[in-house]
Length: 96
Image 1 (cartoon, rainbow, N blue to C red):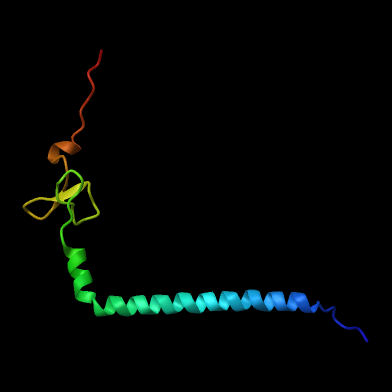
Image 2: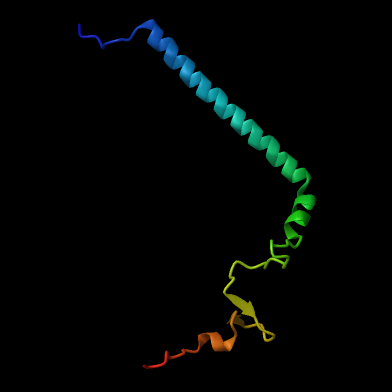
């Protein structure tokens, strides 16, 4: 009768210990994230207030609330490049 090869008892214990350790680590990480999410849910208003507060940059100017730093809204609500309309004009270099 052909039998499949087996492995010794020390290898079996080592594998069991390794996978048990990984499982315990996974349970610990999941528990930590669950507790952290409960803290966030309980302090939702404070977190939102902190996120909506204006932030000053190192230069002392208020940071923009938009990710598009190359455009700004004009008084008509249309976004324009930061340099104004002249930023889109082409300037020819002098010919020598």
